[in-house]
Amino acid sequence: MIDLRSDTVTRPSAAMLQAMVAAPLGDDVMGDDPTVIRLQEAVAERAGKAAGLFFPSGTQSNLGALMAHCERGDEYLVGQLAHTYKYEGGGAAVLGSIQPQPVEHAADGSLPLEKLAAALKPAGDAHFARTRLLALENTFHGKLIPASYVQAATDWARQHGLATHLDGARVFNAAVASGKPLADMCQPFDSVSICFSKGLGAPVGSVLVGSAELIARAHRWRKMLGGGLRQAGVLAAACLYALEHNVDRLAEDHANARLLAEGLGGIAGVTVLSQDTNMVFVQVEPALCDGLTAALDAQNIKMRAVYGGPTRLVTHLDISADDVRRAVRAVADYCSTAPR
Ligand SMILES: *Cc1c(COP(=O)(O)O)cnc(C)c1O
Image (cartoon, rainbow, N blue to C red; front, side):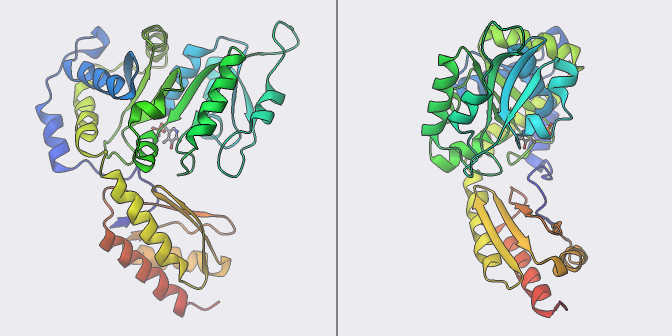
């Protein structure tokens, strides 16, 4: 099976499962699971932050962070297409009583400073929610957000008394793509949420990093959100394995995405829109979409060609360069023979 729908589809490898079986365990709700403690410390150290907190998902980790930064009636500035705003069920508003203020992205994924400034509410006026936080995302739809922009935006936020959060679900992809240590990507932010269940290949798990005070507040919210897990070291062990074995190899995923974009770029009926880190976006001719999806499915290749919209293809640790070549051949075969 060649599954290009997402980098969340990876299965834990035999060695990762072995690490999970062998992990020493405790009760993390009582704070004494040694594997969870080791993971939290390792991620915090690597990110250059004082403390870390294990969460079962990136959605809960982002929400715990937003709730740790903002109180009821506060507001956060966030991208119109950002995961925390668009793809997390409206949790900040529903569970956090936090008003999201969405801001339109520029083409490179950044949120222009003049748009942020226009969205910032005047302080001390009871008409307005209190703007408290700027949340960015890196990578964003695979795009590496320029370091100079991140610095300028977080400087701007601090000048206006705002805290800063990074949805770093794929921040390791950003670090590998830019050739910088993880700590450099995290340094401008007060908190960063990092996923281990994407390209890093763990079955579940995210870690939120930040100051000890912030993490203590997030810990309380995690409990209320139902995220207190007992022998969570079983899961943390998979994340530790990923941290130790699967970070540098993200470069292979980026190279395979380039190979995929190059291959698809030569096929009539498919237009490559962009390729960044491990993601390729293409436009498939509408008349080909349904047939292509079905033809690939019959060959055990999963890719959902979207009628009229961009189709996303994602490389990950269960996709080899040979898999990419096979997928490109299958797309080319279908497109050259399909009626249209
Ligand atoms: C996957 C993802 C998350 C968190 O998702 P979960 O499925 O809850 O782990 C957050 N932000 C981005 C950008 C993501 O891709």
